[in-house]
Amino acid sequence: MAQAARPPAAHRRQPSRLELEANGLSNDAPERRTADDEATVKFIKRILCATPATPTQDETTAPEVDGNLEDLLPRLTSRAEIDLQLYAILAVVLSQFVQTWYNRITPDADFISEVVQIVAHCTREFEQRLKLVNLDLLFLDELPGLLDAHLQAADVAMRSSHVPDGNSIAAVYQTLRPHNALVPLPVDEASILSQRNNEVDWSQLLVDSILPLLLPSEDLVNPCLDVVVAEISSGMIIRNAVMGRACQPWLLWEGCTKAIYALKPKPPSKAESVSSSLSKLEQSGLLSSSESVQHNNGRQRSHVVQTMVSASWATLRYIVLSWTLLRVFLLALMQASSLPMRSQGPKQPKGSSDMLAEAVTGLESVPRPMIGMRLWRCIGRLTSLETRMPWLTGCLSLAQHLSISTGVCGTNSAIDRMMSAHIHERLLRSALLPPILQAIRSAVFPGNVLGPARQPPSHAETIEIKRECARAIVDVVPHTARTLYFATQDTALMQADIESTLDLFADAYLNKNLMVAALELLVVRLFPETAETAE
Image (cartoon, rainbow, N blue to C red; front, side):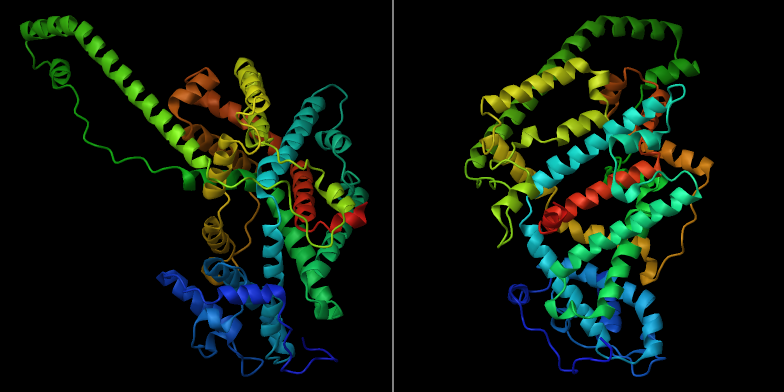
């Protein structure tokens, strides 16, 4: 960093345990990259590896650097494809928000390398802490439980607001689930300013509690770096991105719609449908009356035979399907016996006391069974299953209780380990991160430049976004399942019902409460030391 007591140019940090572990993985052969990845690599080299000759030199005129990206830059994580996307995002941020003003002040050649070293240290430390978190418990129990409590409070607040002389939705929700960062209730200019100040203070305190655990020890005494990193993290990321744009209802509905369209399988190609030629001839009047009568008599005589044949084929299909499912289930159970046991609760970093571990986790020493996670209750509340089909909810609850109490689906049983293995293999695998990061970079920085700020939609456009989200949800559900669930075949009624559920996320203030609670939970799980100061 360029400042009065600036270290010499040859300053290098001592290799930490994280750096040694990361360097041990740097010898891995890089995976094959596409043309888009090669263009991204060139962009990263031009921004993060090239040194401008003059303060006015643009990064587009900087000479291209030769060599592999893995040799020029330190490893950020243990996967090269994740490093590529993270470095691309870092390069865009530095070129758009830092180099535009920093190069006008000083031609500091070590500034970019210092920033890269700091980011690499933080990401490796973050990855090591992420390995200590019980992801099953976090994503399947704690976060869904938080969402379930939010939906319950939002539903009570919405119902209470319709009562004569009742309070507003935000006031009722704040009474049920108050938070220091979002008080007082923003109703006038004075309360809006006070709430905004509390929000700024909370964001700053959150960042100040995290930075000492991520930054290298020699950078903690740098006040300039502390101010820049803290302001960027608390201002741009937490307040503007998470508590600002991410809490808008139209953005949540639009994101849900895009996710459904991205995951929805493409419809099969329409084959040439062979319709009944005789029926077309009859409608066109090209078939004589005698031939028509003879055809109708033959159709009536063969109706019973066709019904029997159809019933036989249907029975055979159900038998084959049942046998296939039973065979797959038995094979999975046989393979589940060789799966490792689930972790006995979340791991704690070295040096943490037993009191802190118990206070931070608040969990049992034995992990909760997969079938007993609060994810299923959250799904039931989102789908209003208890209201629509109370008999099915009761049967499922009874089956859940019996399967856990008898040990069939208990903790570390064969079914429990099989479910955990499939969830980790399909949902919690690191291979899903690179496309997600690439999609985020393409959406926020199209063409590796900052995209134009999107204007908030009008009221009519917001309603249309919600309708499109409801339409996408209805379309993704199979016809038989949605007809049975909604007890109607009218898609308009189905969409109106889904829209009433989406109204639970129609208040930005309520969504901000959910984001703040989820952010605090993630911080406490990743950095258990922060809970010690909160006690």
